[in-house]
Image 1 (cartoon, each protein chain N blue to C red):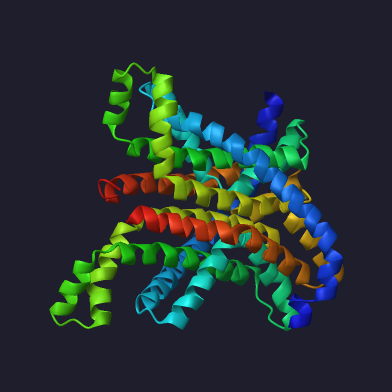
Image 2: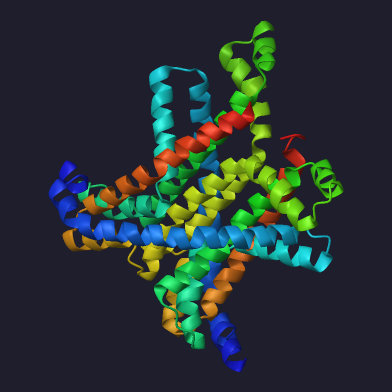
Length: 224
Length: 218
């Protein structure tokens, strides 16, 4: 038992590395917020573009969404970090992580919001158009708000899953929570920084996980 | 550009190693998916049990492992436990970590599925003389599974993608093999090859899920 406490909850090690992990938490939170904002926005724009049903454009969007949903994010992160410099594009590890996860979230968000748009009853479109709204106005003011409301639960779940992937940044040296903790763990030869990292992630994400379950119960229409 | 990302010569050299890695990727899936399915069913039943303690314990388990990023869990198991004198091989660490993560995700899906089956179905089954276990196996579970089939399938896709994390603890799966050849050749083509194989593996599944989702929506 003593060995267990000494290994995973070593007070001296915890105190020593807590500031570094707190800094890591700031990086994780910043990245998560940026990724969710830009990913959902981009996904929403793509879903709206698809609503115009321009064949070539829709085809490109579908291919993009399929490919970015099928590839493991870690593969894309390694390609971005190790591959792009070979063709003269050197991005920081933070930037690579931000861009890859934003594009992954956008691919999922596009599919989810598009599903919401197609599930909006036709009558809503027709009623909006018959009052004189243009197609774009009907989409933006009538259909999209209903579509987004319908898909809030899956969108939240996906956004949480993808922000958790910021931990993958550790592999390319992003100083996020896990990055800081693995560095601290190898310096201190003790597992306590990892315990602290795990606790920090739980503190950050557990409320979101619980909130997502609540949203699911609240926003899922009966009978679906 | 073509030379850096689509170098056929390097891809041919990387091929045997990457294919061997693909075998490991598939092996992880074959072990983790059935284990996760069984574990998650138990956790989901626990989360819906009338017994308060069991319900709370199951929900706490599900939420805890949905909140922890899988890579954190994996590194904790692989790099943390040896300090306490428990050394695990990379394979065992990966299986334990993914099992916990995966069980929590599948459990949340099964929970939603079981909740979606109307109460009358269970009552009708019980009134015909089926035992609770028979009711679950023959009446509730098939309907629950059908209702959440797209979610279950997308989680299978997520598991296959998740296996790439095993490369971080140097388990020789596909991404690890591709990364190894990349670091020797200083060329990204092996990673592109691995990406292509992931696509070949998962694209059909993703198309299938989209079809299911559309059919259920109508």
